[in-house]
Length: 215
Image (cartoon, rainbow, N blue to C red; front, side, top):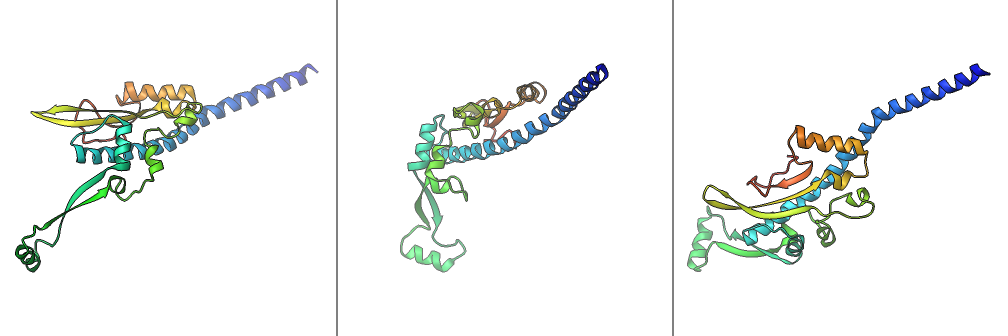
């Protein structure tokens, strides 16, 4: 009887040890799989923010630290461009323009939403969502978290250069994952790699050509 009880006890201990061993191996695997997938979504949206900011700067000569301003620009603004009417190698066409006293440049406008994202097309509804970090609702018990965004200028030599940054801390989209693994990730980024613990584009303290920390 005692032998049977001991055998059952040992079997339970072995099952428990096997489970903990399995979890010690699989927990980091699951964490990394989720992290990579969510980072990809954040990078895609923060890249769209960068595209919108570059369009805004093209029009106004500076960046904006306001999502309300940025989104309104994308949804309502027209952007002016120039194009040649004829090729500079087209002597006949150039001669006709000269006789007509016309310049070889034509100005035209395009809706900001149709040009700032390049070949990628965003709907107005998607533009409205630019401010929110993907998966932050899942990670924060139903509450959507906004990107942290700011705009300023820095001196490069004697020139004032507009800069902006937008960032999403790991906690904003991974808070629902393994707590210790998240702590380890943040610690590694900050104290070992000396990087921002999350996804970030641009920098308020230096001109970086709007580079992202994943690039």
